[in-house]
Amino acid sequence: MSTDIENLFKDKVIGHPAGLFVLFFTEMWERFSFYGMRILLVIFLTAPLLGDDNPGWGWARENALALIGTYASLLYLTPIIGGWVADKITGYRVAVVIGCLIMTLGHASMALETETTFYIGLALLIIGTGFFKPNITSIISEMYKGKESKKDGAYTIFYMGVNAGAFFGMMLCGYLAENYGWSWGFGLAGIFMMLGMLQFWLAKDIFGSIGGKPTKIHEVELPQNINEESPKEQKVAQEGEKLNPFTLFDKVLMILAAVGGLLYLFNDPLEKIGGMSLAPFEIGGLSGTNVIVLVALVLFLLLLVMRIARYAPQVRDKIVAVSIFGVFTVFFFSFFEQSLGSMTLFARDYTDRSLDGSAASIFKVVDAILTTVPLIIITWVLILLAKKTFSRIGLSNIILAIAFAGLWFLVIFRLINKFSESGTEIEATWFGILNSFYIITLAPLFSRWWESKYNPSAAMKYGIGLILLGLGFAILSYGSMGIPSGAKTASVSMIFLILAYLLHTMGELCISPVGLSYLSKLVPARMIGFMFGVWYLAIAVGQKAAGTMGGMIDKISEKYSMGTFFLIFTLIPIAVGLISIVLNPLLKRLMHGVR
Image (cartoon, rainbow, N blue to C red):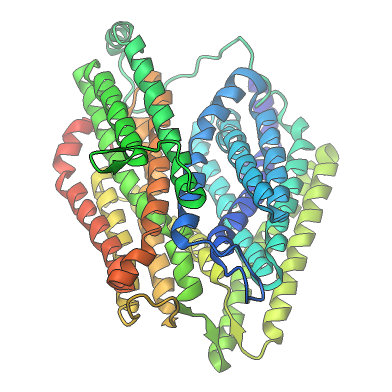
């Protein structure tokens, strides 16, 4: 293994091994397909069935967001299984290829636009993501064993691949889908997913045994967490661990909570869309669906409390702190992920997206710069990679070049069409790219902030992030004050959405990248797997809650107003953010000096 790592570091691109950039481009194409398809879902499902140039399925917004919430939630649960399969059976590289192949089939299935193939496509995308998501990052972790000082830089570069893929996927899949038909958008996502899979598989020789099939020989890795115990503390902890295995009761609680949670995830859209129920009963005025989710939640909390209570006091305090941050994470994603639902609907139905005269000309120039400058930079990286690796993985480089040629063609095709119009109408999906653009622009600034003497504590970061999120919705609430109750369309200035995405992204940069970092620092290595599962569960709950709350857009806007709908989304995150700030002294004590 160490020999393979040294070999990887011989061929460097921008100071990192060439293999990192193979992973960078694989992730870029996967995120291209994932976000390109995701941004289309709510618009496709809710577009009018008849009387439109590009008809969709005409679903009610509540029904569409119920399905999307379940889909988004499952995307954070299947990686737990996919990671286990890779660890025990396939190895990371094979798991990544399996995931890419399954997702390619999923996109192809969705492009057929029948009800059956649509659901099959979503299922394949959920399964494929489970194989892909945890394992490509595990390859990076293996690549940098013994070179931890360079790992932060590697993940920063990799994260740029995530955002570049999201940026171009939402822009191009959205452009083709809204202007030429939904199948074009879904199909394009599948094509680039397939090309990403091929370039990765054909580059497998560059990795040697890294990410290969698991062996029965386990390397011992020295602890890297700053909170790792001293030898004496480790001995005490190990003795305590023997007294705290997963009991039969723990396992029963875990199974029941998991079954209840999954039953709710599937039953919610089934009840709303199909008029069927897996739990056709009521208790105390609560529907069977709500009873199931409440029971599952109580059982899970009981499991967590029982596990935490059996640990040594200092470990227990740290896990309590992580659990509190997990609750804040649920709130954050419940509101932040409105970008997938209610904010996309607001962009389509309530935002004035038409520009004329000088405004249209300025937008076209800015749009061209935003599109071509990142693409030029990434193409330059591709050329550097080819220079270093063509003799070893030439066919992979050729596939990658074909993918980039296609990307350049589509970008130029879109820009020519835009500049040929006298005015312009911005696609509703275009606003989704603002998040990726802001992240690429602002991430270096926030990184320098975290490294300075003014670096806030964890609780303060969560508080600031949630307050910024709420302020973004405050701007939308203010902008939509003039929309009458029950109105299905309006022409609010797009500046409100642009500013809202800016504040939301700033909030994300305060919370999303630092959450897992604090988890790795606070949780002892022997418990990291269990708590990572809990963390992904928190995000999954947030994703489902986002769909449920976003689905209330019609009921609230009809009874009150659209401004009231976004006002609710303003007040709750700000209130939770203030609670996080107030809890800062307590959380500092629970963290026992970890920063």
